[in-house]
Amino acid sequence: AQSVTQLGSHVSVSEGALVLLRCNYSSSVPPYLFWYVQYPNQGLQLLLKYTTGATLVKGINGFEAEFKKSETSFHLTKPSAHMSDAAEYFCAVTEGGYNKLIFGAGTRLAVHP
Amino acid sequence: SAVISQKPSRDICQRGTSLTIQCQVDSQVTMMFWYRQQPGQSLTLIATANQGSEATYESGFVIDKFPISRPNLTFSTLTVSNMSPEDSSIYLCSVALQMNTEAFFGQGTRLTVV
Image 1 (cartoon, rainbow over the protein chains, first blue to last red):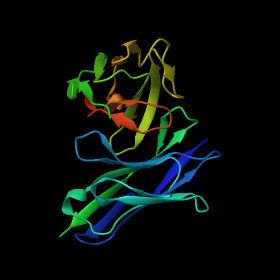
Image 2 (cartoon, rainbow over the protein chains, first blue to last red):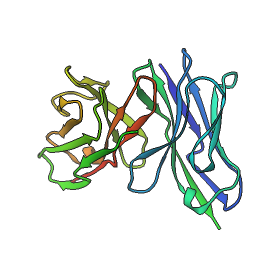
Image 3 (cartoon, each protein chain N blue to C red):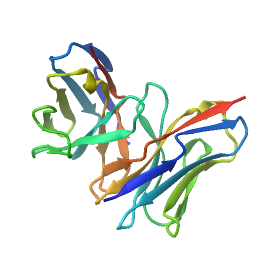
Image 4 (cartoon, rainbow over the protein chains, first blue to last red):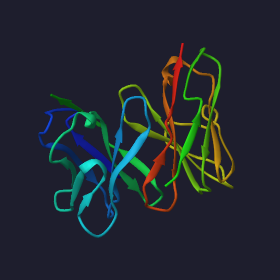
């Protein structure tokens, strides 16, 4: 079965600093990978996705992620954090081509001045 | 993309009662999903609700507790039956427009059982 591991339940960065949120997956088939963001009291919003093709994926709000098959990783980065980036971030993988998302435990990002 | 409306957005319910959550999508979709997000936790899939077939429940979830209706391609309901405080969670509706594409989520229903 597929699974997702997000290293670090809480990450804190200074405004303007690099954001790095880690995600590793396990899958016996080529995965489809996603990053979602959840702001307080809201649903989930898609940041970016990897399906096929280019392994460096760019998303909204300046975020990007790189699919590394050899490392089974899909880490999320942003060069310069903004206060508005403070939220919960979820990495997810689809299972079996049926759009059933398997989510990681989530990483809460705090951005301080 | 798809715009999903969930009702109610939040509710406080007495234990032993039931709550029905509605999910309305602005376009016709085949695949709809219901997730639960317990306090401080990640999302767990409850069931897949495809129009024209019975809902498929994940391990740990049963139809008697979480009956689902899917009367057409734009609407679904999830009922949380005989509620207990352990059912206090956010329940989210999700749709996918195509296989292996991203899922879109509603704003969620924040349920508190007292």
